[in-house]
Length: 357
Image 1 (spheres, helix red, strand yellow):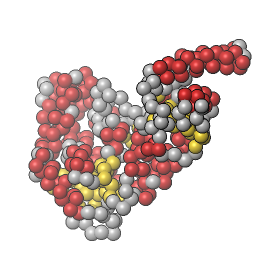
Image 2 (spheres, rainbow, N blue to C red):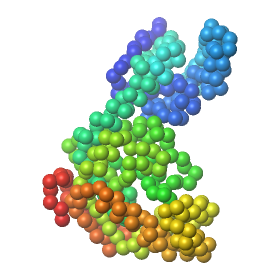
Image 3 (cartoon, rainbow, N blue to C red):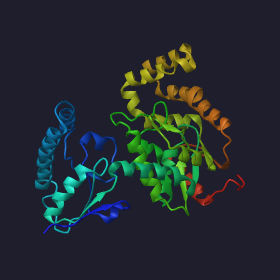
């Protein structure tokens, strides 16, 4: 006996045993509901074939060929990914618009006996929900910004805060980028803008509005991805806890954090050459010479002194940020970092009307 198929507009991932995204692999790769499993009813190539038939032959021929593709692909998923699932299995299924692809998959699941749900509006509705969340949730949260010059171990401070139970929004982690000109992570591409926003919205939705959310000071763009305007506005207006450390210590820390750049100097040369328009040929030639000599410590100090520190200072001057507290670290050691984390937590919730220290 077949099980019912229910169309839903309001849903929670925890209500279903699995979220099945039946769109093609290329659609899924660009963005998908976090945790969804891709079981395409049409491959990327098959979608192209159907589109061509629709235009060059007729809609009827395209639908007939499409039905054959869909039937074979669903059968394959039943024989593999779905074969060992129990009779109580209950998935949420969606395609691009909640139309033919998702209902075809749900119909077969129904015949098997699985109680199935179809997301009304499909991925397009999910995408609207994401953008709605990014526009509304940030203003309900109390952000505290951990600020400081490059190399101050701000990301490590966030990790330390999270380890002690604090709520942390790791923008660089979600963006898979360290947020600076040298911040790309080798052999690990950034997510698409849509995927970034999906992961960002999921994280924002998980926060308790009654507790502060710690976030690192960032620009409105992290590598190639852009923060949602309302999120950037909320972070920019949030109180800051500014951490500082000696430049030589920060340079030493950066040599460890960016060690991969010293192993592939072609990438490093390319990045430094890209700074010529900002710093002039004379200075970048000096940096190129330090690269050739493999004088990494001096190169790191030079880049901090001439590029990163002035850029940070200009940003602080340009934006009138409320600094609630300043933490001067004597070095960048793990022990010093742990002390900074403890001090930050001791400040507790912060409001812009509070007095700095």
